[in-house]
Length: 157
Image 1 (tube, rainbow, N blue to C red):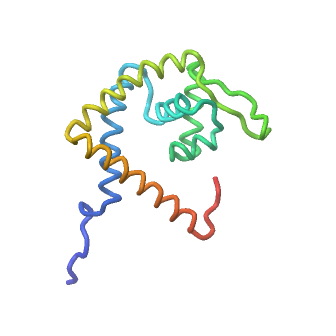
Image 2 (tube, rainbow, N blue to C red):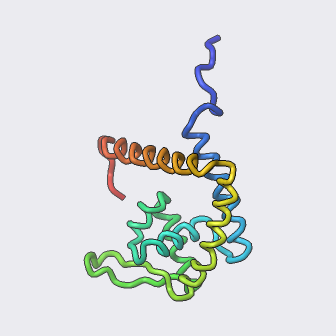
Image 3 (cartoon, helix red, strand yellow):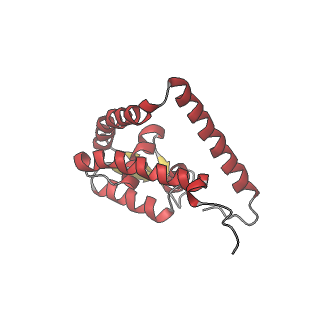
């Protein structure tokens, strides 16, 4: 019988995914209780709060969520009066989504909670380790983009 050459617990993409999901679940629990937002809705809101008005296509790229999840999150935010659509003068087939005054107010309430949770999560790392971790994540993200651009037949969403 051949020896197993790898274990899932040693596979870095798996470890990153599991850790990311655990962190997201922990943080999401805080703003779900208080603000009634699910993870996709908060991700869209966070990106809009940071970047301003974006198209849904831009949101798909920024959040790395699929089109359906972004569409649903946008619909919920609109239905709750937290985001509003406006025409896209550059492309009549799409529109921009932007936080309303109520959305901006909620974003302003959530961000201190999110930053406080970040501080608690990363308290186990020194300041230098946090800087190094951010740098490593940026390098991995850059590598993902390079590999994606080299993928034959990769279609744009």
